[in-house]
Amino acid sequence: MRRVQAETKRIFSIMYSERLENRATVKAGELVKAGAIGRVIQTIGLGPHRMNPKTRPAWFFERARYGGILCDIASHQADQFLFFTNSTRAEVVASQVGNVNNPQYPGSRTSAT
Image (cartoon, rainbow, N blue to C red; front, side, top):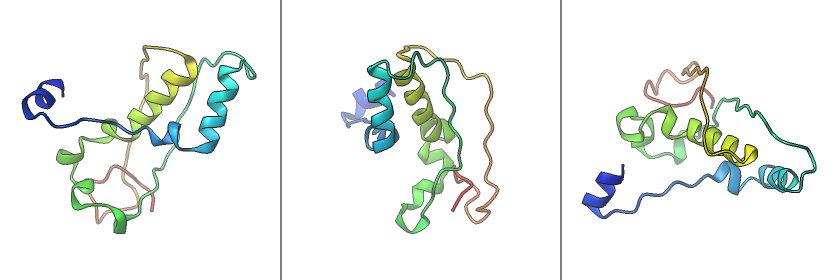
C-alpha cells in the first residue's frame, strides 16, 4: 500500500466512520476514556453490513477492486477494538463471512439489504 501510494502520489485514507461519526460509539469512547465502565478487554462486531445498491458504485461489488472483506468491515472492527482497549496489537482468532441474501452480487462483501 505504501509503495503504491509513493509511486502514484495519490492520497490514501481510511474513514473510520463507525467509530468517528456514530454518536453511540463516540459516547462509548468518552465513557471508556473517563473510566466509567472499567477496562475494556474484548469487543465483538456483528453484521450484517447495511447495503443500499442504488448508492454504491459498480466497483463496490467487485472483490478485486474493493479489496475484500478485511479492507472494509473487518478494518472497522479492528479499529474499534484497538481504540476501546487502548491497544496497539490485536489477534483475530475466528472469522466468518458470507453473502446469503444478495446472489445478484456474488462479489459483495455483505449479506444484508
